[in-house]
Length: 251
Image (cartoon, rainbow, N blue to C red; front, side, top):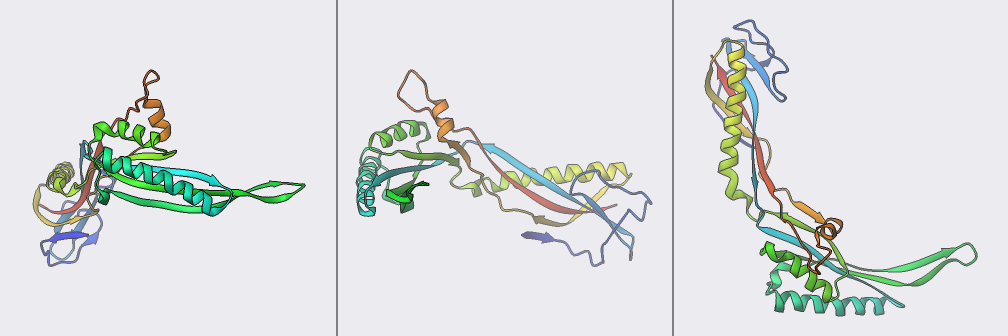
């Protein structure tokens, strides 16, 4: 938690406004009023929020292969061959850097069947290998997924959109949060016939981050045109936000 404070030099006790004899409660969620019993110095605490909706600039693609085999080695070998083809397409055709291609999941597990007569019986093995791919040309994602499928991918779980560097938006969302806090505090002060004084402290309640916007394979299928083979992927928007706890002197 980031905190900026101006020393008040006194003990703050939660309660009503002592100087004016007026009480404020339930005006805003997360808002409280405090009074300094020693010198009758009143303060008001509010929480301000700031948010921006922005266009994502990076996507994380989950592209994988699932194969079966009579033995674990056979299943693993088949998966490795398919992943090699997909990786070659990503690197050579789509010019994706090796640093942006990472194995996210890999495992081999037995596949059992069961019936009352024979009980549990080993049917074979399933092998899974999933790549996480970073891609920045968002208007070409549909084509990329189509090529990956042609190369052997049969497990595309979702596409996640986000902002690669959300820190660049810090100043804007913090200023929005400060303005929102001042608006709330001003309304409360006016309601109790007081005015706002100086800011005594500010603390940031959360880390600024860009939530991801996910598109599942079900959504991708619906977005595809029935008349074409191309997959259509819409990027939408993501949000960058923060909230600040601000304490004002109340005159």
